[in-house]
Length: 306
Image (tube, rainbow, N blue to C red):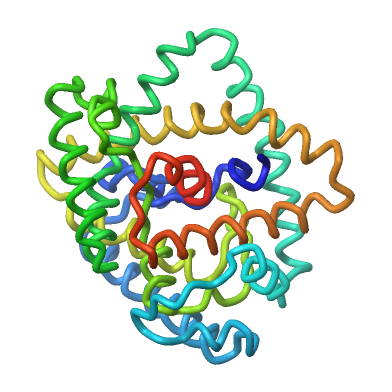
């Protein structure tokens, strides 16, 4: 149960950016046009260099996965154990984890508990549906990049039906018509292509990740920041920003029973969360390779994305 749903407020396809960027979770300053492009290029070059280094330096077991567009299935549980053990910067990661845990205890967890107590289950479900709908374009783009035509068509139908009949996604009409939600992001796409995850990292505020997924997260954020320009782009950015903020609270509230149990029973919370996260991401990659779209897929894939 914990493996299917556990996660910190972390790895998603969204990243919280400046007001002119798409929804998500990394807080970036509002730069001027020229300096923003210069800094973005520099950041991306650093991440690209790190990604290349991770491919070269990753363990032999992970090296076997390097085969672009390979669809050879792997056991996500075992693969997650291998990926989780690749943590050369563990000392630094543990320090960041402690700061993230403090942020969660002081801000996220109390807000999530208040959200559960004061918002009806029906309203929370509607909010969850709406924020899923806001993220469907990103899901579609990654379905296409992965070569998953069936999943891409499923996502297109969901977005069209829920945006219109479903009141901008507040009601998940598509799910009742056999079009279930699935999750996809750029980190998963890289995994489907055969790029190994690389070393484990802890991202401030966002929590546990790996170098491959962190690169995908940053690329999605910065790409959206440049794509959404002008009045219409700003309107879309603000809409996504608000939807993501609410979705973060909604998702954290769903995780409360699992995180409470893990904190109570785990002897090493850092290692436990790192392992669970690695296994969830490995499972998400396997789902992308298989190209499955089923009602059973939604919960695990969505959990892995966050």
